[in-house]
Image (cartoon, rainbow, N blue to C red; front, side, top):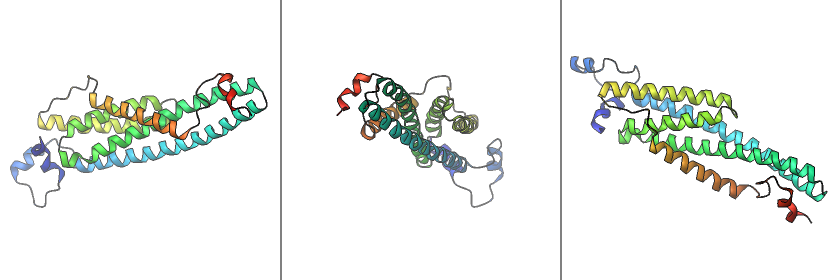
Length: 216
């Protein structure tokens, strides 16, 4: 497998012979390494935007948590429950965004290893599955990010499709990719751990009684 791709990663220093030109028919205009670099750059940009969005929600989280505490101290159960409900929804979004960011970082690292491993399809196939999953979750939260992830996913599909056709490889895109599932599962666990470490426990539920212990 490695030998199939080594020649495509590096630009040729000399004019290819006739046989090489025949073999190059149907290949994408840019070499694969350049295309993967573009994908990585676009993914990293989206990861930065997700992290910025997480920060905005964290600020909103802190503000709402303060309002919950204030309402409790004033024994205003109705307001405390309203703020707690909103805070619970905010934290759900924080978890989704954090999970998406961690998953994309994992995919980016895997893409960076392709030039060394040469196992293109084994990396790109789960990468596309991860992007599709993240993009679906982003639709109602960050529509622009969802569209960009879809565009990046399509680019990966083109790269994989061209590679499979050129090298007579078979790719079953219908099945659920186990590596993609592992990436998402690991990202979810990491996101949960990160949020537990960073955020107060007080808004996990919408019950006023949960906050009673916070009263002076």
